[in-house]
Length: 273
Image (cartoon, rainbow, N blue to C red; front, side, top):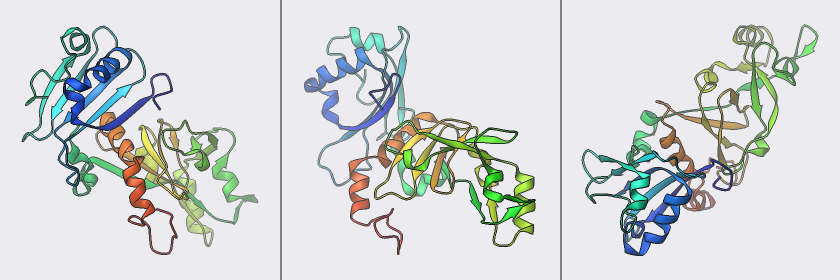
């Protein structure tokens, strides 16, 4: 993601980034990227010996008046400080945090499972399950189209969902809720399930590939959805920084190592998470 212009990435790093030894990397990030947020004092990694910080950046130089938020997540409640990026560059040592006890809009509590449903909403993709016909046409051809037509929303090609990748498109899904309900009711062995995706269409969201050996997650824009071969996750309050943090965790080597060990595998699904 960081290779693309304005691409975003979030990294979990050792707290040494705040110390004298981290000045070079701080100065590089401050001069060459736009900092989104810095979260310090993370307490969710209780099996590591040193502290961790979460750094989120955009791949372009900051504007003269750019500023970012720094949070001390180990304070109760977390305390937020806004830092002007140009002032950070000008200060001796290029410090990230003016005061170590003050400090992003995001706290690691958003990534804890017990808070997941409060911070995020998720769903499987649009389902068009039928081998039947309607008025002489295959039902799948009615809802999966090459042109947007009246109710079209871009359909993500599931095989293109890779970590931080730009997805490819596979035509459109027609979100005609009335027709979907009518066909589902009248055609045996048919399930056209679209309404569960309604709140996701207008939002930026995470797409996760369902049939993959590991967790493959990336961002997809508004006016796009996955079909039933994918999952979608959105922030309940449209908090993009929180969404980026979750994306970084889902694509992390740590989470995929757990997947490799079968920690998140559904019974009978082989190694598929």
